[in-house]
Each structure stands twice: as structure tokens, then as C-alpha cells.
Image (cartoon, rainbow, N blue to C red; front, top):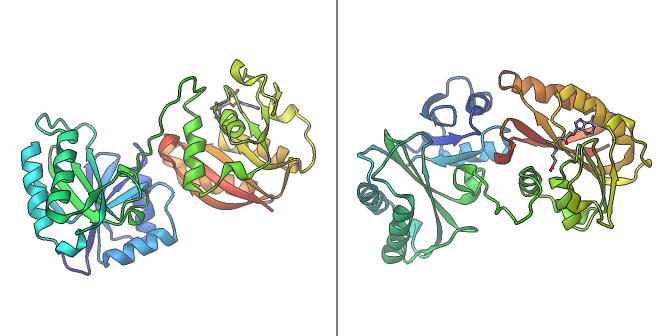
Length: 347
Ligand SMILES: C[S@@+](CC[C@H](N)C(=O)[O-])C[C@H]1O[C@@H](n2cnc3c(N)ncnc32)[C@H](O)[C@@H]1O
């Protein structure tokens, strides 16, 4: 591949890769060639542009659905064994200038394509072998996070893909953008991970806020995170909050529907909403409570999507909320599944 052409693998949440491809077409023009690598989830795309230019444009206008990219520096058909993968990796790295790797910190990020069988391929063995190779041949230091360099490897039944890049050039520094949080003992809901991921993805520090309104709060995963971060929390939901939260001194629980509560004007500097409602209904309910968010305050809102109307849904919800909220970022997070998360600032 010439310097002027670059190939990547793009990954999106299962079922939203077509939207991710559409984002690439809109950004780079209609004639982008894409090919499925893992149906509905991972695809390759080739652009007649230098790699740095592609990365720069994607960073400038971050896509909503494209979760992760890795450069394809080598792609081979293979028999699907660890030994073969290590041999190919050794030969690929040997073809790269040693100074690209020598003395750097490297994160080895390996993935198997979903649905690929690969009985002769072990991710832990491959990882150990790759890390040993980096240490022995390049005096590079294997690390998990915060590395200078990432080696991305994807193995499918059909092919093996390798690429080296800087973590910030992959859109996410997690393998394939699959953000993993440790599940805690007594964790109230998996939904908590959505707010944790939003905090990181939008560069927020939840502990910097004073007082939050949580609309559609039950069973209480988001509320529990906000309480852990030290905020006063008003939780609104006709459904029950987890019993472990009810006596918390900084919690006010209003067991009502969103359109039945009365709140103080400008009482909150953070509003979060994770109601699984149709987007227009949700926007109507949120609009009705925005008087309680102070000007300059933050709103983090989950929006339910229908696959075929994803872009239209975003347009409509942003428009419905636009009299009072300015959109900062929109991102389909790994923990969103069939939703996406919006980050706004109140006007
Ligand atoms: C996906 S759950 C929220 C999960 C929550 N974020 C967590 O971390 O545990 C959606 C919640 O929205 C609530 N809900 C639905 N309609 C509502 C309304 N009109 N007003 C307030 N809450 C509502 C439901 O009762 C449900 O508990």
C-alpha cells in the first residue's frame, strides 16, 4: 500500500456498523470501499489518503457510531493457530523500522472476531508470546494502559490482521473500543457502566459537580455512582430504588413520574436521564424539567435508537432539546448497546 493509501478496520456496536460506514462516507466522500470482516460489527475501509490525514479528520469530527479503528499494516490468510500467528507477527515486526518499537511502552491488544471458531488460536498464549517478543527483540516494555504504542491484532477464520499505532489514533485505547469495568460486589445495575463510560468518553469529572437530578433513576446504578462521587442527588422514578440507597444522607428520592415533580429553579448543576422511552417523549419530559438545571450546567442523556432511523433520531432529539441545551458530543458508547449518549450544556 502506498503512502497515499491507507487501510483500517473499523468497529462499531453490533448492528450499528452500517451507521459507522455511513459516517466514514459522509466524512471522506461516497466512493470509500468497505468490506465486512466480522458481519455487522467490524469492516475494513480503504482511503486514498495518508493515514495521518484520516486519523486527523476522524479526531476533528469524532463519529458517533465508529467506536474504534486500527490501521491494517499486514493482513494474511492463515490456518488459525497461535504458532502461525506468532510467526507472522515476528515477520511483520521484522519488516518495520526497529526505531518504531525500540524502547517504547507497548500495549498488545488482541481480538478474535465474534463467530470465528479458531480452535488452534489462544489469545492468552499469543499475548504472552507477543509481549516476550517485544521485550526480547526490541527492549520494549509491555503495559496494559497508557502505552506509547499499541499492537492491534484481529484474528478471524478468514484472515489475521496486524497494525501498530499510537493509542490516541485508534479513537479508543481499549481493544476494539470494548471498554471493560470491573463489576463490584453489590453493584445495583449494569447501567452504572454507561455513566462511568460517559464520564471517561466526554472527559468529565463527576465529582466536580455539586447537585444532580437523575430522571428515570431506578434501580439506582447512576444514582449510586453520583453519590459515590460526593454529589447531592435527587432521584426521580415511579419504580423502586434499590433498598441499599434509600437511607443515604445525600439522596432525595421522589417516587413519581417525571412530569409530576416540582423542583427548585436552577437547583442542579448536573442532570442525567436514562429513561428507556421513545426519544421524542423523553425530550418532552426532559424539556419540562430543564428549568431546574442552572445555566452552564451539564446534561447527560441516553437515547434509545431504532437501527434504521439512527441519524434521524439524533437530529430530532437534538432539535427538540435545542431551545435550552447546546450539544457538545454524541457517542454510542460500548455499554450503550442499542442506544447512544448525548452530552449537552444548558444555555
Ligand atoms: C433503564 S432504567 C434506568 C436505569 C438507571 N439509570 C440505573 O442506573 O439503574 C429506566 C427507568 O426509567 C423509568 N421511567 C420510565 N418512565 C418514566 C417517567 N415518566 N418518569 C420517571 N421515570 C421513568 C423506569 O421506571 C425505569 O426505572
